[in-house]
Image 1: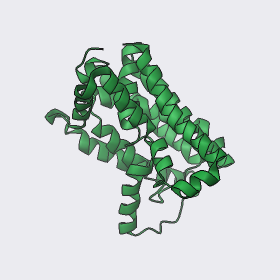
Image 2: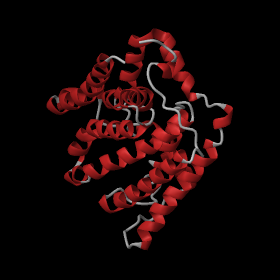
Image 3: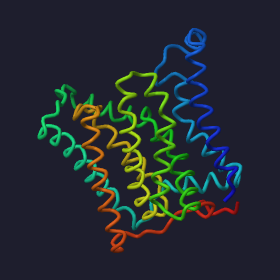
Length: 276
């Protein structure tokens, strides 16, 4: 697998995100007049958030044209034998939010007062699908391209998960720094979370023939907890989340070693059925 594809992917991803972030800060008045106030509906913000998927699509076009892109999108369709992952993901989500919410209460961490109506909860969850960095904006890049690329390079899902999480973390760094010092201070914990989460994802990814829909569903659900006022996003809660993901990774590793879960490394270019 040629390194040039990785280079192109990273240049586009970071160039769009960091470049637009820098330009909007330096020329704030100009960008505000042209595109309006900074929000998730601002075209500049949307391009920055979706830059990993934009880069992934472009690299696949270079690798194999529209055939490669078509094969990539086919990875959103689960095989019949993989449908069992839907209830597993729902169960994992409930276990996750329950563990973090009641775990916070058990150890004395402050939890928010739940004021949202059911309708407001649904709206928040739907908004999160489009606004959370890494879901739709990242699935075609971080998971669709970088994960199988790194699994090919290192012949290891664990190394691929760690490196993907690290690069993903560096990508979102400007958002943390710009937002507030408090968020910048908990950034290292967020990177650790990403690494552990993406190691877990790598096991599920390989068990489902590289399915992308399951990643979207799981990331979408577990990233919605704070928006649903089930817990705060702070350093204390992050330690609980890291503990949860660590246990989850250990269990997944054990199950794959015991061959209870299928594990076939998904690698490029075979992942999308092309030569490169």
